[in-house]
Length: 84
Image: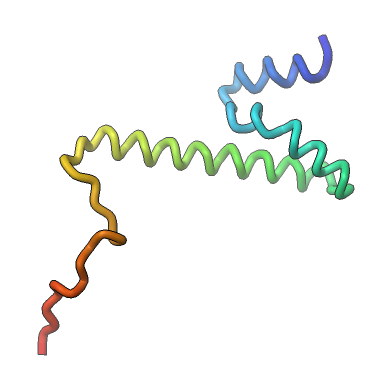
């Protein structure tokens, strides 16, 4: 098997979809900028971790079944009463 096929297989087996999507482009970038192996590996793992955190956040919001999704961006701060 070629290295690329093995990488595809292992990223599927280890359930690392973000790593599978990005390793080719990050490997090219690392080669162009002569990055150390550890730096490119760190970038890949950071991308995977960030993706997992975002997926977990989305999953939790969906499981909460909020009738309306509200954020601080939509809050009307003019309604706040200051205590004197």
